[in-house]
Length: 267
Image: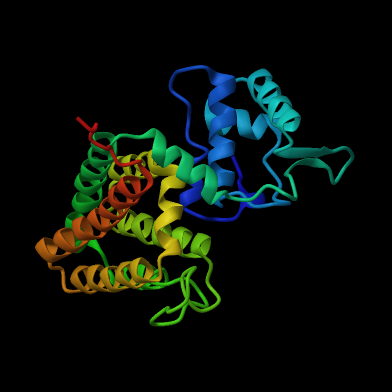
């Protein structure tokens, strides 16, 4: 199917991969809700029609019609009739750091650590393979996402620095890793990386409100691109694992900071 109304983002491909199991209507809703929460779908953006959406997700048109009806009821999408009509993301639908923080608080330290280890394993393997297979064009594509457009070399203000927002930082970081996976020339690895990014979802928006995290991410992205350019598989893998660990460590620290401290009972 054509996703031209949605742009050519590699990250967005994670939203429109076939659904394997579970409640199909609920999963279609979850995919679109997640895409809005992570900024992959933005206010006013047009969705594929019911048939295109059903084809991409591997479900029936009846399922997508019911899911879109639910999303309309939630106020997440609006539908316009007529030749130039269709279903659009609602104008007030924006990624919510508050909801991302709620999801973080619903997870345990073990769950976050486990997600991070899985993410490290897949992304690190992508980097090692990319270092062996990537050409100059692949490296150039990666370098375009080291920083989002408008980001200062050393952000100093909350929210990521320069004119780049936390959401733009998050999307740029996601695209960087997906370009890395594309350079590995492995469809299986790329699909798994997309799946993990969906699992991480809104959580990855939170760290990019931290200017120091933004700068560390950009520095590691540059180091990974340099290692791939040199065909240094060990360095590319090590720096990529360090990049993922940066996110995991930040989320664990934030989780601890948001949890109430236990107090000992007075004898």
